[in-house]
Image (cartoon, rainbow over all chains, first blue to last red; front, top):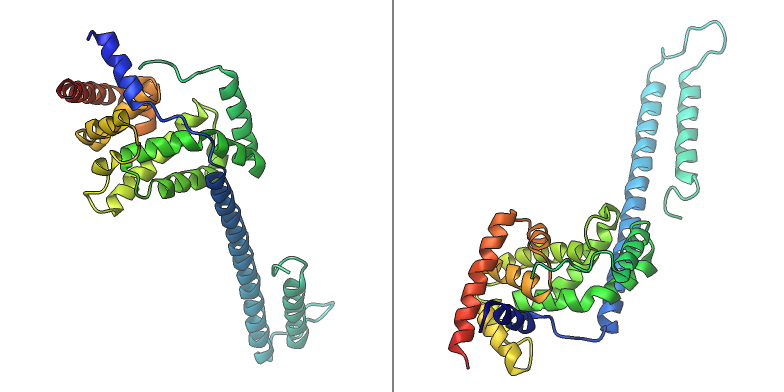
Length: 106
Length: 176
């Protein structure tokens, strides 16, 4: 056999077998990809919810901290922000963040 | 060997269009790509890594391709890009598996005598030589494409192909 014949024989021997498309395999991959997408979406929503709840919790903690201090009232000339007002503002932030559409995956 | 992987062909152009669509999150386009390439990827994985677990590796390859669809840059053929993912997935899977699984089982993938003979011949090669031989002889990739797929320098790849060729010829010389 010469070089060309050898290479031809190797090509014929190592060529992938002719096969018809396997729809079952394709469907399995598609299901897997869709499942991964769904999982990724759920994970993203969970992290987002966790972030919002963390921020809300921090807001509540800050609010109670502010409420616990009696001398937080601003000494400005106009509106005076007392501890109770600060607390209500932070609680309002918490409520808004928690109820924001889609924020918690609802 | 050395034949360009059908660059510029209609099929490759369609692959590129589908790959760009998949990169934008088009599941139908990705499904079409799976349908077009699954037999080649599965054959490559099965012949290089053995039948056992071949479909799992092939499936993992396509799932990685879907995850990384946004990273597709249109450089080279889509099949080459897929085979590169398949190769890295296969190498990782082999490291996790028991060492004796692989070449010896490759012989059982195909049923005809010629295929069994090919399986035996391939079993004599090292993992990298087998991958190089399959890509260059079996799948018709150029040395450069095979080097890119396997992540090897071109010179190293050429040496591997030459070694694989010599070993395969030796085996063929021993068989009638």
